[in-house]
Length: 275
Image 1 (spheres, one colour):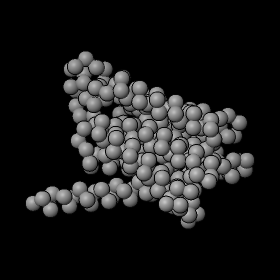
Image 2 (image 1 turned 180 degrees about the vertical axis):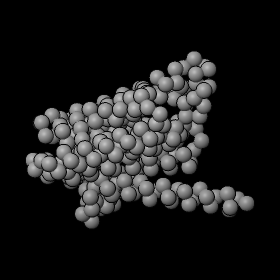
Image 3 (image 1 turned 135 degrees about the horizontal axis):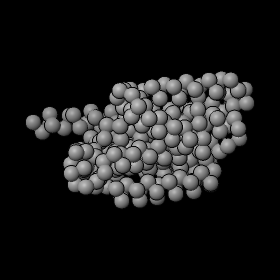
Image 4 (image 1 turned 45 degrees about the vertical axis):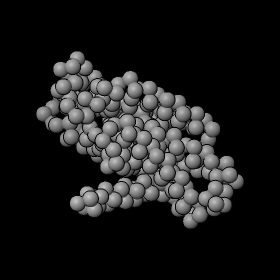
């Protein structure tokens, strides 16, 4: 059991990374379940990349990167709404336009400044092994906020995932709850990107929740499965990173994707065996 436990017992940075990964996994499990059920993968991906210019700008002027990420996510959500209302473009087209534009802007800002070039890897792939106690507190608060919002909005969120018209008929303002769901996705990405990076946070949102959708039919059970898969992926990914020198954030996401495909194969074989 030594190689499986000792890295977390002997190294404080590994233990903090494990705790941070567990908190990120729980938040992403709750939000990712709605992303999968609502079919919001594209906007989730766009938000994960849309924070890039905000983070780069924050580094350039000395602001906290989380604040810059929040500004970038806000511009993405607001921009999609403006383009959709003021033009004949569909929401998918608006999302794609803002996605490409913000990503390109972020790359231009990074490439034009030597002072933040060295921070590119941290922006894209996170700093899993550099998590501080303050980061853990921020992640813990974020998990509580995500859980509270999801619990308070559970019924309208569920109706939005399966029948938005029914949500309106039952007295819920579908558009308002849709915006709240987008804000929840954006907030989770903003908090989680510092740990796993803007390129990898989308994997943590999607892969564990995808496993939950394969193994469960109730939303609550899906979230539990997604949380378990996320925490397990964090543990296994950090172990592999420690023993083989692989990039921590990328390894964690890779493990979660592998688990998804294993679950996909397993669930596809079960009916055949039963038959």
